[in-house]
Every structure is written in C-alpha cells, then in structure tokens.
Length: 259
Image (cartoon, rainbow, N blue to C red; front, side, top):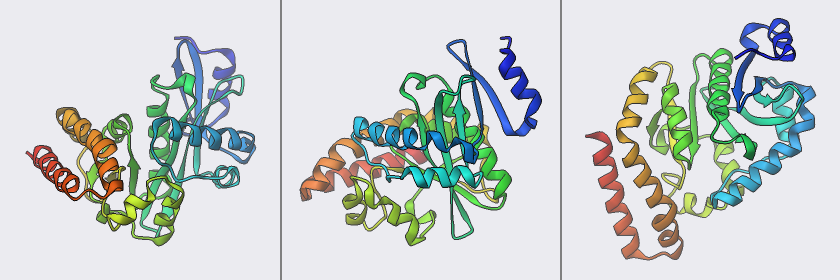
C-alpha cells in the first residue's frame, strides 16, 4: 500500500530503527519511541488503562499521568499515533534490580483493538528493551490470551512467579490491583496473571515458542478461564473444597502443558 506523503516524510526524516509504520483499516499508524513532547497523551493513556481493566473485570497496577510522562521523557516508552496526531496505543519499560526488564502498561485505543497494533507495539518495545538492556531478562504479567500469544511470538516462555524479580518495589506496584489480596493470600506464588519471561542467555527461538503456544493454546485458554472464574470466586470465598478442586485442575493444566 502506498504511504501518505506525511508518513513518507516521517520515514525519511527519522532514523530507520526509531519508527515503524503499519496500516489499520487503510489508515497509516506511526509506532515510535515516545518523547517528552508526547506528555499531552499521558492522561488519556492512564484513563484508558483504568477503564479497560474495569471492563475486563481484571486488575491492573494503576499508573499516574506523571509516571507515564516520566517514562516518555526517559525514552523508555513506545507510542502509536496517526499522522494527524490521534493517540492509538502505548507501552513502557520498567527495570528492576538491574537484571530484569518489564514491558508494562500495554494499551490500545478501543477503535484500534484486534487490528494488529498491539502486536506491533509489543515488537517495538521488545526491540527497545533489547537495545537498552541487552543482558536483562524481559518479563511480563498478563491475564489475556492475546498478549500471551504476542509474547510467545517474540520468544517469551511461561514461568512461575519465582523466576521473576523479587524486588519489593515491583510487587508493591500490584497494591492498586483489585486482585492484590489474592496475590498475597498465595504468598506471591500465583495470581490471576500469567507470568512470561525472555532470558537472553537461555531461551528458545521465537519460532519454537510460537509453535508451542499454537499447539497448547486450548490448554492455556482453559487455564485462564479457571483462574478468572472458579479460582477468583472460591479463593475470595475461602472454600476449602473449591481450593482443592482448583489445585487439582492446575496440576492437570501443567501436565498437559509439558506433555
């Protein structure tokens, strides 16, 4: 598809590695590293993060517009916009203990969801993370199957919470999540989110993790449903029989995942 004169100009003016171009419903989308000038979008981004989490009925570690603006100013964020300046999507980088990197806060404007924009943003923030922190382990927590698939395409693998950073500041960020009581009840060993990790020193190739996810996608889907329904209801209610049933289903999930 022929690019608009505006996008062609952007492509010529910016360094090749700093901007990605994609098309959604015949509209050009610019995906690039955010700058301090993008602070004007900060409130819109955090408002959408919160409303999206409420609509899904899941938790999210709340971030302020000031925090998002800081990430933009530090060149630790990726933003997607239209040539006319309309905000489309966002994601940012957090670092922990000098060894771990998290690509957090992925959010896409409602009208651009299920269009491929989220995947393009994740690819860009992953590329930025590898450039800035080539030795760091990159991880993420998600409640969504779609994000799990995107991560798998990049080379992430599902892991236990014990393989993530144990930095108290990271876990403190979960306090604003509606599911924080569940996390603490499980002694930070499990929650509704699924943990995924990319280790630059020890990892499968993206094609391998992609094929594995495609093969086991139905298993993942069933597991997420267990977490988001029976796990949530019974754990909050403290029903011992329910907990035993959930633990049994989790064991079945792990067996199916590894065989």
